[in-house]
Image (tube, rainbow, N blue to C red; front, side):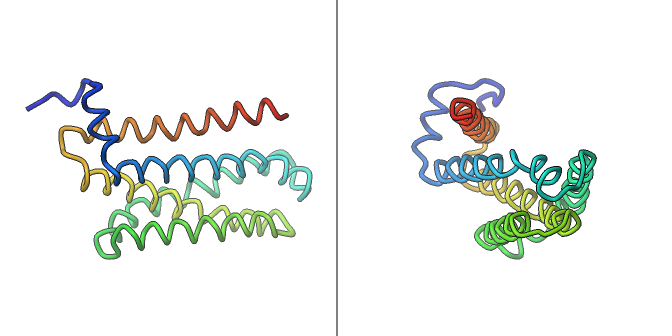
Length: 168
């Protein structure tokens, strides 16, 4: 049995030949870049547009994180019952509703209500990604697959930040 602690070019090539794995990487990049783009403006939107004040950003973080603590075990429990596609759909629907609320909210209170959907969105997406990788990737490559997935998302984030920095 090969050690899972070393990353080899051969392992990376094996993973990149998998269409299922490439789909997960593309979904992760797309979700991360879209979310980070929108979240980049939250502080400004809360403080300036909704006149909520600087402390509202901290409150927003609390409204996002507390539901994550609650929904992570729930997402792990629902995945076997609903399956990967339905859990992805739930994640996407919650993300769309959340960002619609952010765009349309006339007050900081309603805006914060939309933040509660962060838990469902993130937890469903994360649990489904990890479960899907575990299901589709050979066990000896699982750690490499997870590392590359998170690295790809981080690379997408960095690219977005670079582009934004050049435009701004």
